[in-house]
Image 1 (cartoon, rainbow, N blue to C red):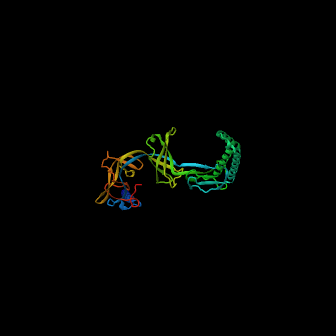
Image 2 (image 1 turned 90 degrees about the vertical axis):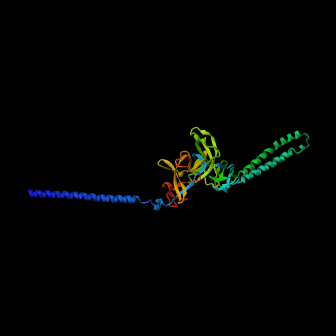
Image 3 (image 1 turned 180 degrees about the vertical axis):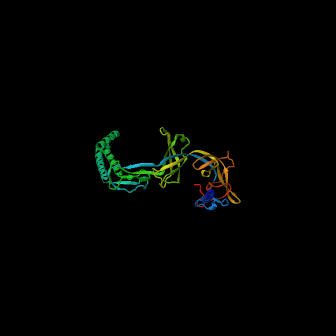
Length: 398
C-alpha cells in the first residue's frame, strides 16, 4: 500500500514538471515570434517614401533646392478685399422709332467702334415722311415769297422786317422747316449706331422683328479697361490713396495675378456696413476678364521703404525659433547654412528682416535664401540650386 502511494506521488511530480517545461517553451516561442514581428514592422517602417531616392537622405549628396536673393526694397502692407468685375461703361441700346429690323450686322461679343451700325430699320415710311415734309416746305416758301413780293420797295427797314415776320407766320414757313427737320431725324434714327466703342452683349432682336420706341435692342459694354469695386473697412481706408497699385486674382484664372491701380475712393462711408467703396481699374485689352467675375484684391496701403526683404516661403520655425537657410558657396560646392533671424512686418509674399535681435548674423541683400526643398534640411548639408525641385528629384515643401 505504501509502495503504491509513493509511485503515485512520483507520477504526479513528473506531470507537474512536464507542464512547467511546456509553459516555458511556449513563452520562449511566443517571444521569438514577437521579436520577429517587431523586426518586420521596424523594417517596414524604414522603407523610403514612394518616389524618393535613397540618395536623397544621404548627407554626402547635394540636395536639390530653390532659392531667391534677398533684396532691399519697399515693403507694401496690403489691404485685402473681395468684389466682382464690372464694365467701365455700359448702356442699353433701344429703338427710338418704329420699324421692322432689316439689318443686323453684329453678333454678341463682337467688338464695335464708336458709330458702328448696330441695327438698320426699314426706312420706307420715314423716307416718305421726309418727302412730304419737303413738299410742305416748298409750298410754304412759295406762299411766303408771294406775301413779300413788293416789300423791297418799302423804304422803312423796320416796316419791312415786321411784314417779313408776319409773312413767315401766315405762310407756315417756320413750322414747315421744323417738320422737315423732325422727319429727317426720324429717318436718321432708323440707323442705330454704337454710342461708344465696346462689345455687343444681350442681343435681343432678330431680323424681321417689328420694334417700337423704347424696345431694347442690345447692350454695349466697354471692357478695356475694366473695373472692380470693393468695400473696404473704414479703419483701413485711411491707408489707401488714389493711384496706388492693386493685385487682382480672379476665380476664373487660378494662379494668375492681374495688376491694376486704385482709380477712386468714395469719400462717403456706408453707416450700416462701416465700409467705403474703392474702385480698382486694370487693363483688359484681350477681353478675358468678363463683368460679373469674382475677384480677390490686395490693395497697396502702407509703404515701408528701404527694408531687407525675403520671400515668406523662406521662413521656417524650429524649436519655436524663426530661421532661414542661406546657400553659401564653399570648396565642396553649395552648402545650406541656417541662420536664426528676427522677422518684422510682412505682406502676402515677403517678410522684412530686422537687424536688431538677430541671433546668428543677418541676411544681407543679394544673399540667396532657400525657398523650396529646404524644409527637411540640416545645417551644413550640401545643396544644389534648381528651378524645379520636383523635376530634379528633390523633396518640395508643398
